[in-house]
Each structure stands twice: as structure tokens, then as C-alpha cells.
Length: 371
View 1 (cartoon, helix red, strand yellow):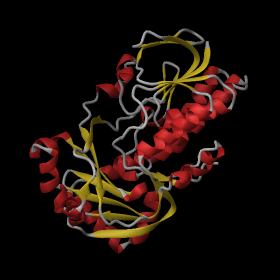
View 2 (view 1 turned 30 degrees about the vertical axis):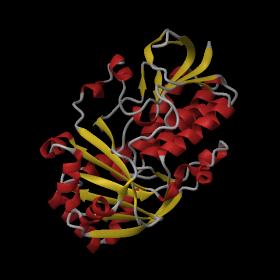
View 3 (view 1 turned 45 degrees about the vertical axis):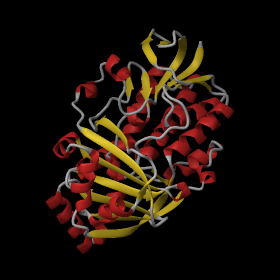
View 4 (view 1 turned 90 degrees about the horizontal axis):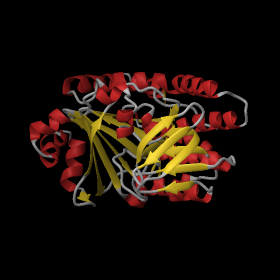
């Protein structure tokens, strides 16, 4: 019988593994892929999580990320507004950051099983039985779900959101081209929006969200970029003059922003498995790491006998909602303004007239530094 089994080795899963292993608990992490790996992600992280990671002995500044201090928002026509970020953040490839956390998890004595998928899991009163496709069986007192936005595990658990016909698609490409080191930009186009920032090694990350309908309309990603995204002059500059660093873009489908339960069959869900904020808010990575901190603190209290399992689950749900529910609410409603030419044009024009409005809007989707 092990103490904790973590399903998924993304930001939430790895941060939880490091935190709990350093607390002296026996942790097994199951990850279906390997490290390092590229992921479709905006790769900007709010500085709110820096104090927490550094308290674990994990300092992502060692990776020489770009220090992001300014934000730019543009409408499809190219009308734009640029403002300084109160807290700021940093921009680093997930390829680099996930591997960095993976190495720290190994150093913290987390037992990690790569190329492994959970086939079945069951809660049996006071412990979990977890079976993998490799024929392994684990018994664990606590299970944390950090496996991302959508998994067959969700289907097995009959989570309601899994029935949703998710119709968003995410695309990411890296380019070599001039771009400010300190800027994260959000450029609207008809049918979606695109985030741009420079990461380590001076690569420019261009990641956008659109709909299946938009892709079907143009037929291919290349045609979509040429005919829809390039209507925005900022994006036209990238696609016409930037040098792609990979032969093909990275693509994910079935992206859903439907509400999710944070505790399912006694599993504590973290990161995107607990809920996805709209990428336009630029805060999903920070939320994933923040949720790992909440879950880990409560799990430690549970093993120290300070709280019961029922209290652990209830407190996790309560604390998660207190910190993130409002962010998801605002993210959901802000997304309605993006990807529609007229609405985004009017929104950007309004912010040009009243730029002070941008600050409270951004505050609704970000938090304070996490100690």
C-alpha cells in the first residue's frame, strides 16, 4: 500500500509529486508519455506561483525564461492597446519546464512510471485500487488526478462534461523572428484568438484557439492561417515573415471549457482535470500549479491525522472554488468577446478610450503571489 498515486505528469501532477514527496510521503506518479515533450500551450505563467515553486527548491528562473512585463490586445483590424502587467510573469517552453519539474520529482524520490496508462481504478472504502495497461496493480490511500483536460478516465468516471461535444481546437507553432522579450500579446481574428510571446532561446511561441467550424470552413490549418488569422496585420507579419522552426504545427482537439467537479469518486482533481480557464486569460498554467499546492497541503493534513477524508475532499472543493471559480466565470464571459470581428473591434476601441478598465478586468483572472 502506497500513500499517494498521481495520475498524469503535467504541471499539477509534478508539482504535487514534489511537494508530497518532500513531506516524506510515498508517491507514485503515472504518466502516459515521456519527457521532454512539446505541448499546445501559450507558455506564459503568472509570477503568482514563483514563491511556491521556489519554496519547493524549484526555481524556473534557472531556465532563463523571458521576463514578461507588458500585455498587448488587438482586434482583427489591427487596432490595439498595450499596458504594463501589475504582477507580470515569465515565458518558457513546456518542453523545458515539464522536464525540469520531472527531474526535481525524481530527486525528491517520487517513483515515476512512464509510458503507462491507467486502465481501471476503484475506491474500496478507505483505499484505491488502480490497474494499468501494463498489468500493474497499485493500492493507494489517496489518488490525485492531474491528467489534463480530457481523458478516457473521465469517461470511466462518467464525468458529465465528457459528454459535451467539445468544438475548440488549439494550434501552436514556434517561429524565429524579431519580437519584444517582455511582451505577451493576444491578437483576435475572425473565429478565434492567438497568443504570442517569446520563450527561452529567443523562439517566438504562437498559439491560437479556434473552432472546428472555422477549420472546416477553410479546409486546412495553412488556409485558415492565410485567410483568417492573417487578416490581423500583427499575425500577417508573423506568418509571412517568421521562420517556422518545426515542419508542422502542434495541434489538439476537443478542447472544452465546461464545468467539472473537483472531487470525483474521492479523487482530487488538479490542473485542467479540475477545470479549464479560457486561454485568453493567460493563467491556466499558474492555476494548475496553484491547485497542486492546495491539494498537497490538505493531503498532508490528512496523513497527519488533522482532518478526515471527508474534510479533505470538502476543503479542497471549497478552497478551489474560492480561488478559481470567479476566474473561470470571467474567463468564460471574456471569451464571448473574442473571435468575433465586430465585438472585438468595439471592445478594443472601448479600451483605447478607457484604458484604465483593462487593469480590473485582468485582476479578475489573476491572483496574488502564492506563498
